[in-house]
Amino acid sequence: MKKKSNPKRQICFTIDEDYANELESLKEETGLPLSKIIELRVKGYEIKKRK
Image (cartoon, rainbow, N blue to C red; front, side, top):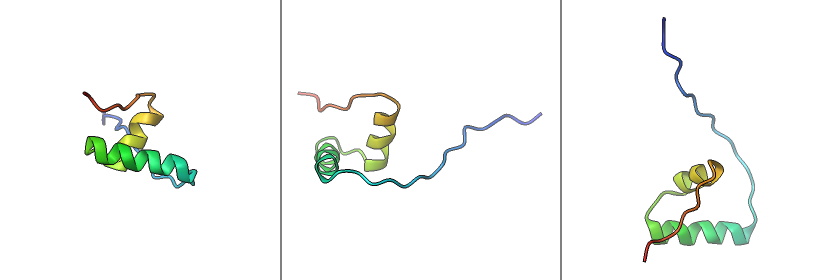
């Protein structure tokens, strides 16, 4: 019996310019790629820079 994998789907969406700027600044502050930041946000995580 094969194990079921956790497949991921690729999607496309349009976001507001202000939100895009917020994501870009998070990318610069944390070093995380945008795809990971979006994935974590969708899962309900809050991303903040440590002091």
